[in-house]
Structures are given as structure tokens and as C-alpha cells.
Amino acid sequence: MLDAAWISIVGLLSASALAGLPIVAGGRSLGARVACRTAEQTGAVGVLCLAFPLEPPRRADKPQQSRLDELDAVSVPTLVVQGESDPFGIPPPAPSREVVIVPGDHGLKKDLDAVAQAVREWLVGEVQGLSPIGA
Image (cartoon, rainbow, N blue to C red; front, side):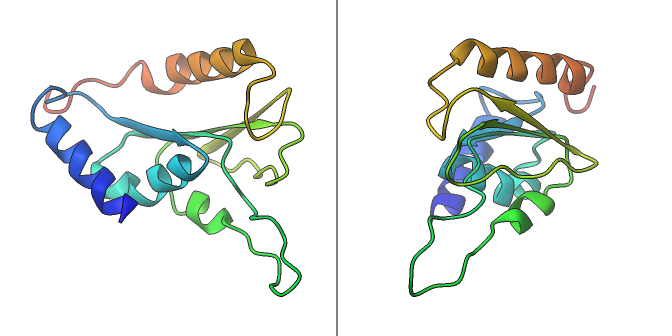
């Protein structure tokens, strides 16, 4: 349901207020998962994941699970900003995925300047040269 809502909202914005602009989808925690799962459908040129919840907390009655496949399925440049002590784990880098580890945990509140710097540097390095769609 979240994925469908996100696809709809991005579609509406892409057809109006953001028409012709490249879309970098992103979110924090569950929102990061949604951005990954919907990147292709929304036409995103990049994905920003803040505190991607790689592994849900362990439960005695369930085996450990990983959500790495959601990240691996993204084919556009991706930035993951993760707290160094995030209990949900830290995903590995990949050819189109940069992982920046900052002080803190899943909340990413310990060093907001480090989070902002990582995002800013990635946007400038990866996305700045993109031209508007159709240009």
C-alpha cells in the first residue's frame, strides 16, 4: 500500500510541479525501503536511503532476515547513510551504491552535519550533471 501511494504521489508531482525534472527518490528507514522498491516505477535517477533497515530485529521464533535484495534491485546510483551503531545493520557498498557511515544509531540524530554533508557530496557528485528529462 505504501509503494502504490508513493508511486501515485511521485507520478502526480512529475506531471505537475516537478515536470521535466529528474527525480531522486528517498526516505528514512521504511521510507528508504519504499524508495528502493519503487525506483524503477517512478523513473528515479537516484535513490537516497537514510538509515536503511537492513535486518529487522531478531525474534526467537523466526530466522534472521535480510532486506539486502531491496537495495540490490536498485539500478540507479544509490546513497545509504547509516549510523555506525545502527541495530538494523549496515549494508555493504555495491557498484552503484555508496554507503556512508556516520556517528550515531538508526535515528541519525547524533551528527546531523555529517548526514547533511554525506547527502550534499553525493548529490553534487552523482546527480548534479543530470539534465531535465527531454532536454
